[in-house]
Image (tube, rainbow, N blue to C red; front, top):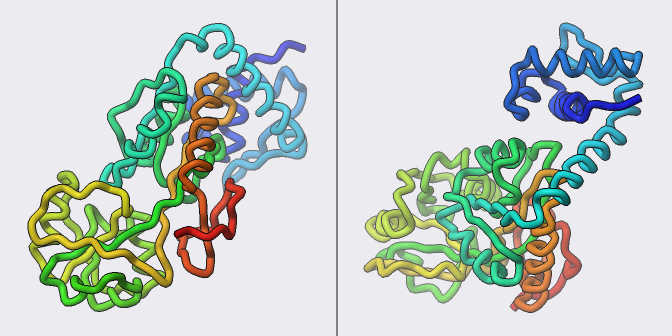
Length: 316
């Protein structure tokens, strides 16, 4: 029995989404075309893989048994293609989280990761679509749930976050601040707070009840808006080089120190050899520069840290 990889891929996407329309969208085909591929696969196998009902689409017992080896089949096919034609192709990498300058971290490892082609930058949903469609090989930014089932990620860096505020803010002269000291201030964000996961979770965790949003026109414009109002503050990774904005103050946050988590994201089964080089370069730099140190007694993350071996290490 010879399996058609396109049919198996259609099954895997539909099994991950449990929605034929969304699965078809990730493959850039019509829902009718996806349904036909799955029907032909079921005919070939002589068994139903999905149970369709008024409440949605569900895997049958046969579908549940078929899913793990089907994923391996798709991954092997992708690896075979990459081995045949992908070795000479640069690794295509995109980023998101532009206000926090993700390129600062990638720039430190790019020279050891082989040839990279960098995208123009997008948001996490757009990056997810680009990865699932094969337009890019990897992306770099802050990963937060829910993630598409066909994607994998690896934590690369935990970066301390400072408060940035106007020099006229009542707390501007403090050498350091606890996050809860900012409860009476206005959290200024470059967009709707409920769409900015890190800032949203910070506000929830530390009971920041006042917030306002501007338009993301770049870091200098954003920080000028912060500096112009003595009631506002926002958050930036401590290593982000600040533009020369008059009247701006950056103050470390302590007890706890919020950490911004940077991760690499890629589609499961992508066999491009540059992915291994990039993840290896990130791991080497993380060990050298102590990127992954985390102390739960002194640091705060929106979710538990994963994928690193220095759990509980002291960060200075």
